[in-house]
Image (cartoon, rainbow, N blue to C red; front, side):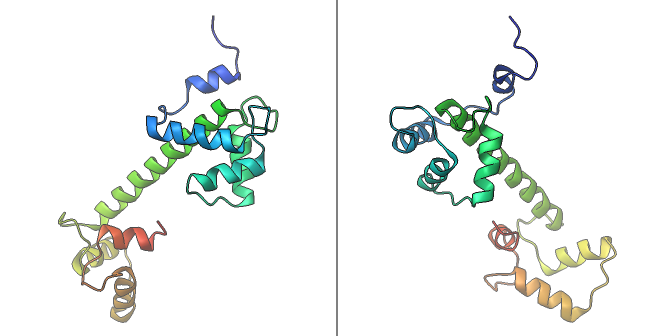
Amino acid sequence: MAAPEGSAAKSLASAPPALPVDLRKEVEEAFSIYATPGKSEITKAQLGSLFRALGQTPTDAELADLLAAGDLDGNRVLSLEEVKLLVARKLHETSVDNQDLKAAFEAFDTDGDGVIGRADLKNVLDSIGGLISELDFDSMFNLADRDADGRISYADFLAVAGH
């Protein structure tokens, strides 16, 4: 029988891939620690503790967004299944973000050698009409070249991108 429009079953069907076994076990363990005693659910405050136990540091606003996104049945608390789906979605989003960053890095690495050299950055800036003084260019390049080796590595690029 088909799931009714807008149902939790429909949402589950479009969920991202399942959590890796080790992360699933970690989420289940953290959930059992932070869930309300005698209930199989967690509140926004408990969700914050759970995410901190998993190495994340969400703000109160992010927790509210996470609760709203994960609360499939609208009861303002999350079940274990809802938490696992939420963590799987966040893991999937992070993976997509990383793919986007890698693609951006590769767009700047015009010679394909795995680093962004001065010529690479200059070529990209010139191609988009980036009129910039040599002094400003040097400042920008040196800011991005975190280890001062004359090239912008992927690690340097991630640091500048805030990752």
